[in-house]
Every structure is written in structure tokens, then in C-alpha cells.
Picture (tube, rainbow, N blue to C red):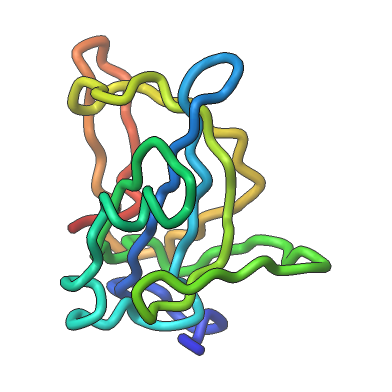
Length: 144
């Protein structure tokens, strides 16, 4: 298991999103490798999104990663029961189900997520922001 009690800055992870057709549009069940493992490169590179979608009865599977955290800590209450799945030999935790604004969103489009997580950025650590055309600032959580 990857240490999540210390600094998570630059820790590597990956996500598999299984997309299904919901009543109000596409939604994705998000599975994340953190803190179980560091998304082993050889296993990640061998993942086949089309095969994962077919194996899991999804209309699509999206591979998001590998990525690296930009915050110092993640504060999230652990659920009583943690659902895990293995994709191509990589164990992942089910983190969320999110509604997708589109199957082909424009770059940097807003997709609101009901999140119950606190991201902590330690004093002195750089914070990276994106500024949209309306002047709103968005704090980057990860990079890839």
C-alpha cells in the first residue's frame, strides 16, 4: 500500500473510469490506484480500454493516468466498506460515480463533482492555477 499519511506531492496514481449511459446522460464510475499502489508502469501500459469496457459491461472505459498529485495531503473519511477491483493486475479502489458533461468535452470545460475531500497545500509549496476566459481561477490537483 502506498503511504498516504505523509506528503502525497508527486505520488503517482492512475484511474480507470467505466462509463455507462445514465438516465440523465453519461456517468462514470471512477476507480483509483491511490493509496494501494503507484500505478506500475508495465501493467498500466498494457491496459486496453476497449477490452476493459467490454469486460465490465460499460459503453467505454477511460484511462486517466498516470498522474501525479500536486497537493501535500488528502483528507477524506474512509468508508466503512471499501470496494476494490483489479484491472490488468492493478488493484484499484472505487472512489466515486460522476456525471459527465459530455463524452467528448472541450478542453478545460467545467464538470462539477460532489466531492467530500479536502486537499491540503502546505505553506511554501507552489500552487498551480489555470485561469479560464472568464477570469476564474482553478487550482490544479494533479499533472500528467
